[in-house]
Image 1: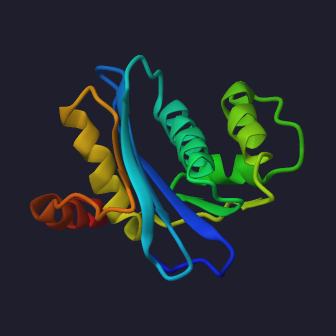
Image 2: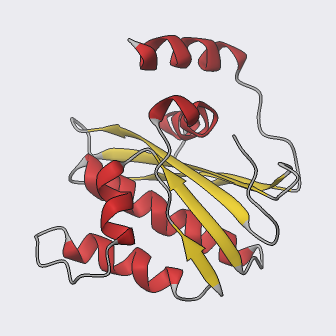
Length: 164
């Protein structure tokens, strides 16, 4: 992950979503301009209707977590091109997706500055592994000013699986 330029922090978000159960788990990693982890979290959720809803929820959760850390200048990266393009759009969204985009847009207004670049799926492996941690738990997990949890087997398998 490329670090942001100071004074920005970078929020990487991703989701593990199971359509058959409606269960999703968001992974969030927040890094500073020195590429040091300021915080990370795993947030499992139930009753999610689609992967789009899960990705929009992850954006909201990443933004809210970063607000709680006290950050004011943020870059939120996601591998969901639809979410990123809708968040960057200045036009009113009149689609059925509008309710899911209006909330992260509203939360982003709480920052002094907020940008939404797209992150290709290959660059989001760490946060995807983190999201997968939530598949095995019903509890939110937070790490603030601590190292990310270790998942060497997941990282290796995920990189291979996601490049096929």
